[in-house]
Length: 66
Ligand SMILES: [Zn+2]
Image (cartoon, rainbow, N blue to C red; front, side, top):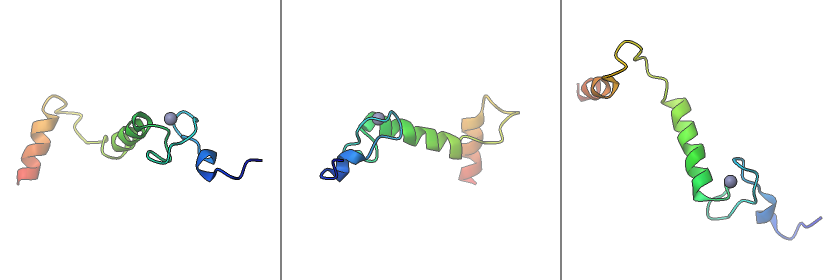
């Protein structure tokens, strides 16, 4: 029972290592970046470009410019 270090109690949801205050709740910038990338991929990674899979970037750009 070591309740003296609440910061150490936190664990990285990515790898399970002890989280660092600077990168909490993750243990490192890498874990944070990976988790963030995963979130972005899950949230914005579902475009309806099954037909134009090659020009998805241009399509999105054109649509946004309008
Ligand atoms: Zn980690």
